[in-house]
Length: 485
Ligand SMILES: Cc1cc2nc3c(=O)[nH]c(=O)nc-3n(C[C@H](O)[C@H](O)[C@H](O)COP(=O)(O)OP(=O)(O)OC[C@H]3O[C@@H](n4cnc5c(N)ncnc54)[C@H](O)[C@@H]3O)c2cc1C
Image (tube, rainbow, N blue to C red; front, side, top):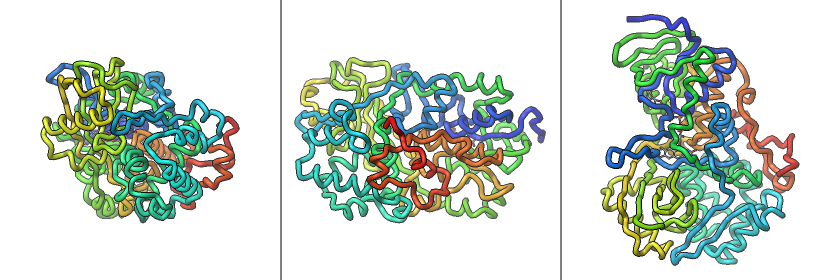
């Protein structure tokens, strides 16, 4: 059966963050979107599930936002759930033996403008030697003055070596930050992607790296979206899988029904896009040949319950350990419910549940000796094999634009060329850029402004990348330095 969808101006396939952000941006401008989502819930890779063992609602993995994620925060604001994020200015780094260093822009850091806001706490940190701190500051100055678009074709490790960074500094400092932000280790990730994280995520503004952690299950963040869209003439259909997609039609899996609309936007991950987008469209559009070469990188999230308090801070970095980050589970503050996150988790995929539990326990006990007697009551690993794109130098240069010109299929999703790593911020940006393409507007007309870099940051060399015609790169705007930074 084939029919048009007269109530709708556009069909969006996929109700992850990109599809939702695209739909909301369009509905807010009088366009009536129909969103089709194969699962029976919203959120895609940033969602929750009910655990059959405990009947608890758990997130597939802890998701954190940073202060620099201005589009994601604006998206949550527009659906009324921005206040569900709890903000932390302090990062707690635990070394083997149990010493803790707090990296913070507070305390003495308040006296220093960006990008020096972490200098005082880094100087006091015990997990690096004084000599390493000197080398680290050279690395930071080099990051500030580097045009990241010139480093798309080389790895971040090469950049770090060029800047004199040592093996120990890489494994103790650079690796935990980059693996969690880009989901690849320093020796695989494109330097441009890692430089972006440090330039915009840490150095540009004193609030850039504040950590926002949802205090409710991820799926609850989107609870107001369906009614909001409906009130503006839009609609979301859950449990509705698309088999085939053209620029003006979609064919549904279960019924074989074909729906027509003036335009269709693909907001599914790139492997699904390659499966469902009409082969004749793919053959005529160079974006798809490049997408066939893309790789993915896994993330492991592990829900742990202990018989006594283990985690004494809201979150923790375990210095130089396979287990990278620990978080207090949402709604729990007693340190017994802990969520462990391992990014770039290739080495963990083959491990059994018992092996995962044993490795994490070893890492926790090494850095938190008070947990030596703690008994693990339950361990629920969630392995996301296709968690994010693998932003290697080979891939970064070929991330597809939202359109390939007038009449071409519009693509949204965290894999598209937003300039951002595969994150919730990247997904919202991609959705808004796709909406702008549909409306014939410039991307920045729908993007929230980035946190403007401070005057000292600019004086030390931070500049927009020279290929800043790419929508995702329109972040650093020297024309409006932040007086308040
Ligand atoms: C384990 C893990 C941890 C992460 N941690 C963080 C973090 O801490 N911070 C952060 O910012 N980001 C994090 N991310 C990344 C973030 O989750 C993603 O970048 C973002 O959610 C991607 O959104 P998207 O809309 O582009 O894609 P998706 O979320 O994949 O959405 C695509 C949607 O399309 C649907 N779909 C697919 N095929 C079809 C079809 N044929 N028909 C209909 N619907 C279809 C899917 O079901 C899905 O809902 C993490 C990701 C994972 C997996």
